[in-house]
Image 1 (cartoon, rainbow over the protein chains, first blue to last red):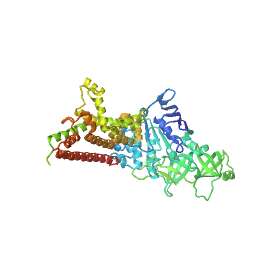
Image 2 (image 1 turned 135 degrees about the horizontal axis):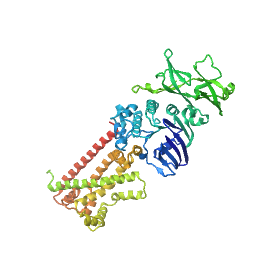
Image 3 (image 1 turned 90 degrees about the vertical axis):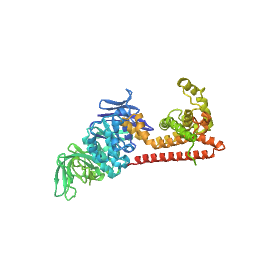
Image 4 (image 1 turned 135 degrees about the vertical axis):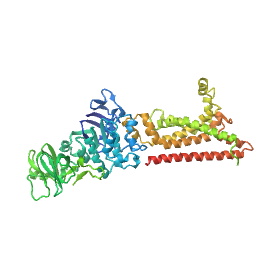
Length: 372
Length: 231
């Protein structure tokens, strides 16, 4: 478990971050310049906070009170940088094993397993200049994984790539988080990546932690609108593939006992998937309407409403133990007379499904992220 | 034209000996100085930089004279070397190598410093997060990436050693077989009435050596650059 409690002054900018992250992926989310990278650098030991404490499990990396400040070498943290930072004069293989022959470290995962996990077997004898941006980033991830790290820091690993390259890497990241038993801190300003990968979400804004919690909960919190961004804001729901309708080429996904129908997903029955529902793609109704093309109408309960300035209001609804978020106009809010506690139907226009891992086909050009 | 005479061959061989020793000692020091200037910030940085460049700006005769004062048998450094280690530099070929090395030093530091500054410090940072220490990182990341610049610097250093005249003649004089390198030999021939042909032969030899050195260093640099560019 990683625990961070730090304060720092960067020029005129005051940074203060306190959060804990256990197993799985913790996303540090926020706009560019919010201080995410600074936090990551301080965890890695590449820069020093003014005061505070950073620890991984029972190993203290930094403690201003006890005057502990381990060097980056001693911290054993796998760091994946925004630009891959591969050594240009070394082959992919020598890059991957760098921490072994240059740093004297022992990898905790077998070399072949990492190579297979990231699909970089064919690249081993090439030099970085001959790799595409996506391949370079995969090798960089492999290099960090093979350094026997306690945790893996990934600082916007996709930010410098175009959309096609991002889609190429996302399935590998998804696979990594499921197969590598190592906590990952993932820095991003893309809600799409965060919604797909993270279990814990830390929202950082202007050098402060605005919210920490499970991703489904934090994403639906209404007071975080400005931090998560209007267009992409929404909710994530975890579900299970229930059945496949061959006639209409549709997949049914069970979320809290309710069925959500989506265009066919290549996945096994029973597999767990994550759905990403944007607030602007959800409408609310008092009863199941007829004569409508939208087929997903989920019975939910209104939890919370914000009256914003301008035309819109946002409504958080409970679907069993999970939450989703709808953006409707203030006018409809009044017309429907919505109040907390009221049962309504959430009409889902569009669902993004995280493609489950079992169907990952390395050779094929996957877009990985289905959005309709 | 006749082949080189024994005296001329002696001068050419001596030139390689002097240039080789000068490079062997001065190059590692130049790499260290260039790294310090490129990567470290310390008090006296500008002064250190200026000191290194002095031999480039001073008249070579002055440099030779300073060497004579410091490294002569009764000089502060030369006396120490003679009394405790039995080493004499003045009027010896090793002294010629010292003069060549001192004169070549600033010429080597400059391109090496530029080459090291061109190596992204972020790569060194990445090496550190992978467990490599500073010294290891220097030898396996910084140095290989700066190698094209270091080769160019070595060429400059060797050329300077071959052409060095003023400091050498002041410090170690012009002794046949001991300190009379190619440049000194050529000068000596031009001063004797029947030395014209020998001078011309040495000039042509110098041109061939210079051309060969440039060609070799270009060849190696290109191969290195191609490796970094992929392949």
